[in-house]
Length: 257
Length: 250
Image (cartoon, rainbow over all chains, first blue to last red; front, side, top):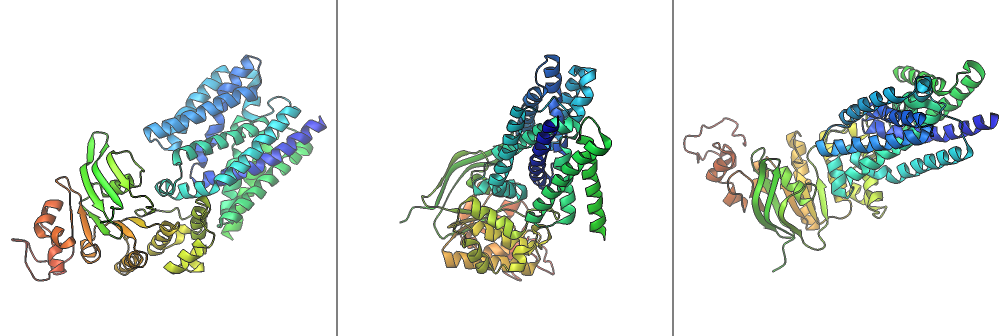
């Protein structure tokens, strides 16, 4: 049990860094709120997998990536803003998820603790997190250009549409790793809050990313410890998110001083 | 006779059911300074985007071999909160295109971009400063053709003058070809070697003195032009047109 918690904490720490990095870019792309609901796209898959007695993570991954692809296509074909496209797909996914997830599993699906963490689960989670971090670092220049002006980025040789899809998929992959211990409702909180906190405290790109990473890592460690020794919930998601919210509140105080 | 740097033939651009540009043909030689003028909605920006291959079109756009394009877009409204400095922005292009690392410093020096300006966040730069950064961005990669879309929109007259002087000096020093979209006909008259006018009627191209005539401008903008009086002060060339005290351009 202790070993599982240890592995979960290590995975969560690496996840926090990937989430912070993705969050910084999502904030700069002004798609933080839209991104928040992307995690809910996993719900129908989790529900169907639970009904079929299969791995909820695999089911969640299937609908998460399918939904992400649909968001991208809808955006590309209709010119809808990301938040509109996500909103349409999200509402549909939530409705299907609520209908198919068995009542006794609903809380776990929404707040985390989706099964035990096996060694394979740990290693695949770590591989996904490292993949996200490396990919974002490799794509950072293209993303910076497209954030300022998609036309200018395209004229420079960036395939903006493909870049948007890659970023959405990386976002979803990050959410997928977070699903296990944060749940569908809170998986994206570590993407949003540390980036929002860092934006209050840093106005240079490097500092912004570093502060977001530190806030995210601190939230995970403090959230796990608070839960293990104080609150003893079935999942650390709520304490991680609450600690992250505290850091955001503190950043507001620092900024107004 | 050298081959043109750009040949456009039978170019047609359609958005939905609206034909923006129809059957446009023109050529541009290396070193030409071409101003693209026309009323709102005539397709000036759309033409630049087609030349950059950013939008679908019918017809043919052929750039000569070795043409390297730089693009200065119409005013970009940067988020004031964006934690991205001018240096971050320029360095992103240098890294993405794998350009020599000293090119950023060279271009910055050439355009007089100070360290303070380079390290400032893009969102807090003034309109003129940001425009210079956009020109610097376009110059990275040593382009020999510059496509510039209304570089002085919403800038004050002094800054506007400086931006045009900068573009002119670049054209002379580097022998660049410049295609410039502009609403400012007096600037076009003074600076452009050729004028391409886009209108719903037949597009035309030629030297400013031939194109910027009262009759042509009236046809192009579907209204009597006061611009001509601005250039040729006190010469009432448009019958019936009233004289304005300022003699402002159209």
